[in-house]
Image 1 (cartoon, rainbow, N blue to C red):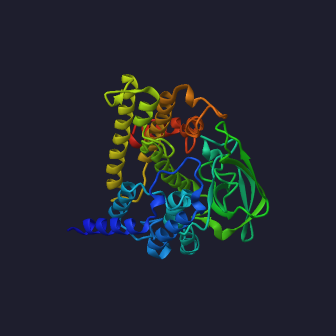
Image 2: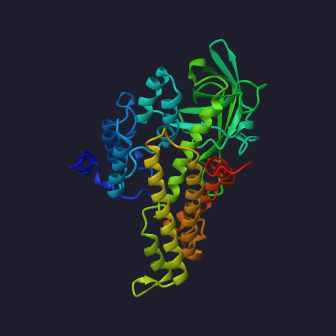
Image 3: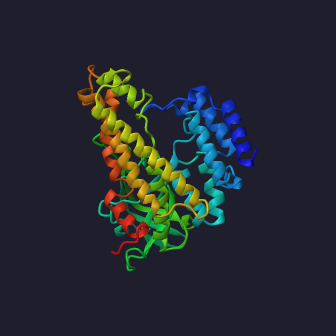
Length: 391
């Protein structure tokens, strides 16, 4: 038995013994069981193993796994339909890898173990009312006064800012430099005086996004990650991690809640003939969607194997972000086609909870091609950085 095969056997046995049965079911769209006994137990066990951040060094709270071992762990978790042990992925999948790459020793020791243990909820301070797709046009300023930066300005679409503990934020530290050259990357506590958060109600009826205002917010100079005025490099790197994470939306071929498969739903709503979906057009669309998702998964796996020889995500993350979000929108479109007018309700006793969830999930999915960099931005990155086309 090879070392990797032995690791798979050990991992499968450990997961079987330690993952509570209730954590082996799909998560409801409105599920908030993170405070349940089993969820806490599952989180504690995974944290103790270092598997909330499996490839991070053990000294920073990670599991110290190789990329191949982490892939095996991911496969075994998927095999048993295990729920994520940690839901706050902004720290583990976006900021943490950036601190590992650009942070100093003190910042790594200070933040990474707390991120791995889920002790800090993070939000992202990137977009501004006047700087969305043109992110480098941001105007939130940070002026150095002694050992502190004084920050003034505002951010928008700061997901989860109303419940976050800390923010990783882009600020302009040199207003006279070319716009890409005067930006810095800084971290600060959301309870710092001068921080004000206003949730934004979305068309789906929920408010995960916020507008955040900063008025004379004083942040220790030691919270600056990397070199002053060179934050754009860090910002682009974090966006690569974010786009890789967002691409995972399209890899989920199941409905967005603990419901039957898309095929079973189609049989329920559209009828079946000889055990197959009665509507041949819908049947074909579902099969094509499955093929698209499989192609995405296979290509992602290949790139991950190549990435193991490099230093993390590259511009190809834009390709996966674009294609993955398109697949997620496609999935939601199919669910509406399957349920028909039953998926057009907003409230009331005439609709099931699954039907109402489908309506809201479809509305929410429309933002997938905007958040994390619009599809147009991704296509530009792909054309320049992946295909090497001229400007």
